[in-house]
Length: 132
Image (cartoon, rainbow, N blue to C red; front, top):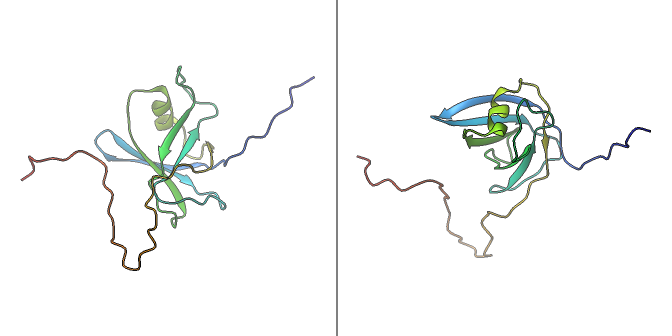
């Protein structure tokens, strides 16, 4: 008797494109499923079903969502470290279906309810004092 396949919650978008956005950093663009809603600052697990390479860390990684909730594609941007997952993500053909779990996390600004709330800008990275 064949094992019964258990459906797993999540989405199955396809890889639309990838581009190097800085030295050693790539952006990966995926279809945005119609019901995939998220807030800026959230992340999602990206799962490769049959990657060309795998290692002890497995086939799932969590990435911050780099696109705006209003865009029609999902974008994840990452440094390309020497892991089987990231090498696989760079190699898989465009059009490959991946699994993306629902968004999670709350690295977001909370409303204070004040009428004249100050605007905020969040920047990740290192401070550089040697720029001229």
